[in-house]
Image (tube, rainbow, N blue to C red; front, side, top):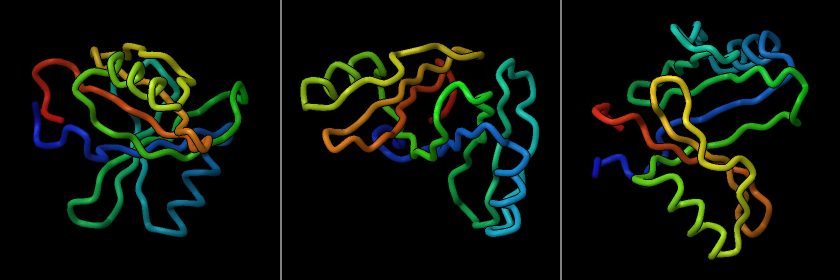
Length: 127
C-alpha cells in the first residue's frame, strides 16, 4: 500500500466547455493545461503553479452529464471502496471502471449528496 492511499491525489473538472474552463482557471489561478498524451477520452491535464500541488484534469463531458468539480482520493481497491461507501450511506454514481492504462476509478456521493471521485493507479505505478 502506497503512502498516498486514502489521500487526495487528483482533482477533476467536468464541463461541456473545456476551452472556457481552461481560460477561466488559467486566468484566475495561473493554471497551465496540456494534452493527455495517449488518452482516448476528451481529457486535458492541469498543473498548478504551487510547488508540490496535486495535478488534475479537465474532462470534456460533451453535455452528457452536468458540470462538476471534484477531488479524487487514492484507494487500494476501488470496488471495495464503492461497497463500503454504500454500506456507510453513500451512493455510487459511476461504478468501478477501468481507464486507458489500467487505472481504476469511480464517482461517488456522500450521504449529504456531495460528489467525489476515487481511483487506484494501474499496477506498478506510484500513487
